[in-house]
Amino acid sequence: MYRILRTEKLAEKIFLMEVEAPRVAKSCQPGEFIIVKMDDKGERIPLTICDYNREAGTVTIVFQIVGASTQRMAELKAGEAFQDFVGPLGQPSEFVKEDFQKVKARKYLFVAGGVGTAPVYPQVKWMREHGMDVDVIVGAKTKDLLILEEEMKAMAGNLYITTDDGSYGRKGMVTEVIRDLVENQGQRYDICVAIGPMIMMKFVCLLTKELGLPTIVSMNPVMVDGTGMCGACRLSVGGEVKFACVDGPEFDGHLVDFDEAMKRQQIYKTEEGRAMLRLAEGETHHGGCGHCS
Ligand code: NAD
Ligand code: FES
Image (cartoon, rainbow, N blue to C red; front, side, top):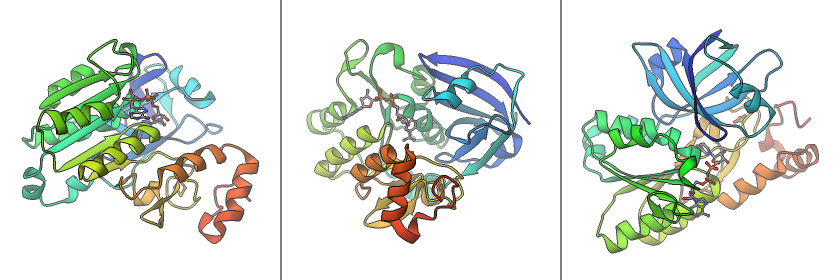
């Protein structure tokens, strides 16, 4: 069992939990994710890692209530426990594996949208811990939905906050800030990392393509097993079939077929939709998730 040490409501329907999981804390890296299960009957919920403390053996997760399982999860209190806390899963962010001198020579721009601020945080923290100043844009619908502002401020070189309704920071979407920084303020970046809702990542990528700025995105399609067996998290990247849970979750955003990914996300919700996907995707659908056959 994996004990919950602390819970905090960050915003409406958005919660943070610090969980005792020493094995995951010891080896996890920015970019990776975990899957939690509350009990025997519980759904497997994939969540990106927001923070970790190797000495204390704890991992911090942030989640949004999107259905019955996450609603139940939000009701858990400190002292209660998860039955399973599996991870770290997926591939770490590219910069963790690259030659550090190469990474250090680049100017990074991180773009976080809504709950996507949680997986951006450990990446920005890694940069700070390695002596790098990075620019960070955080976008939220409104002031009350902005999360981890103080934490991000402590780790970022420059932090730009934007809200869709102008209730805090700049008014507008993250894409408007990217354009302003590059076109009006003369900022030059070598790489952009964008994490948030798929629609945000799609529009960030359309803009950064236009600006000639390579962009990494973190994909969060439906996941079931998280180990590459079920085929639920299938994506097209550069015309090739990829599985977000084992090949990602991070990919070259300019190669991701976002329209297909968003359509698939919707279709996967119904039994009929899954049957259709099984038919259309043939052998590459896998079908081992138990939902399709
Ligand atoms: P949101 O809808 O509040 O959007 C956050 C910000 O993204 C907005 O403030 C805006 O600046 C930007 N944005 C949204 N649509 C845009 C567009 N069309 N063009 C340009 N910018 C746009 O975000 P939310 O409600 O927190 O998002 C929840 C979604 O994020 C869920 O679907 C969840 O699954 C997903 N999510 C993704 C990841 C990931 O790893 N990619 C992690 C956590 C959550
Ligand atoms: Fe990726 Fe099953 S969740 S293949």
